[in-house]
Length: 279
Length: 106
Image 1 (cartoon, each protein chain N blue to C red):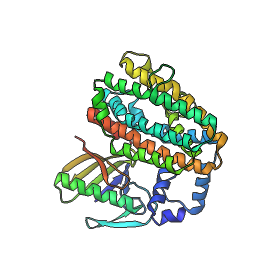
Image 2: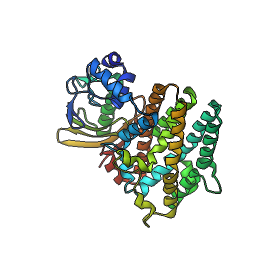
Image 3: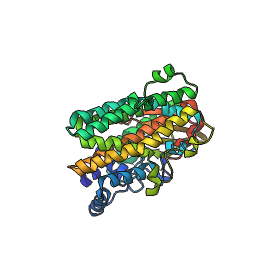
Image 4: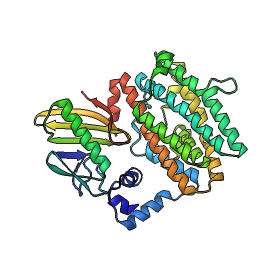
């Protein structure tokens, strides 16, 4: 890996730049850094650490910064790109069901798909709550549904589809459900600088009820979703290193996708451009 | 062309890749008569696409100074200068270093 990076091989250089260090180091130091980066107590704790480091660390993702005081434009960017994410989400989870023979995993994924896409126990699906949030912000349902995903969203969705097709079910599970940790209320306890969004939104009257309904539902559910799924990952992991590499691919896709939400938001609110300068 | 990436000088092996600031690799390309260092061919392609787009949009023949802030995931906010003129923009590359998003910033 070190020698390939020294020779400017794009895939190796990009991986090292994005995950380890952009400053060239000698092979001994590189080996030490790599070993430290991949060492863990449990896989689930390693996944949480990597997520915090990438999205909530010293330079939080600009979309998350925007969600601390979201404008109508930013929330619409969220709605328009996320409808595509959620459709892709259930397709990828279906591949876990297809590839596993473990009943508790099949049931878990079926329940997740129901909650996200169909509605569960009389509650509207997260997909429906998302569209209602967009409507409450003044954009008709037909117009929301008519938007094609931005290039960065397409790129991320394709990466998750490749993971679904190429990797085994434990890796897919780790790659996808670790994304739900983004909204985990307890991340601050582990070093996150902020929450996924400013929780005051749920309790004040600055936003329509539909915005609170969508954000509140994710706030309640994602922690338990991610927690249970990652317990399965800990329990059934046979090749931890491959799981780690696949999770990193998924996080890279997520970083791209969050930027797409912000870019879409800028179409509605040019002031959001200030956030991209915070990189 | 004087280049800064995330607040630091860039464009040679010691200072880092002209697009991303990384010091890995050993890839060079001559751009506007100047030999510039890149960590890999992908960054060189992205950089060339960016320069071409700025020249096309501004009508400039050359860029004297270029400041780049950001990264692949978050996109890049840049300021190009030609003599007294200044052009600020945001851009994001796709997986093949083509420009996916380009917005002039007022």
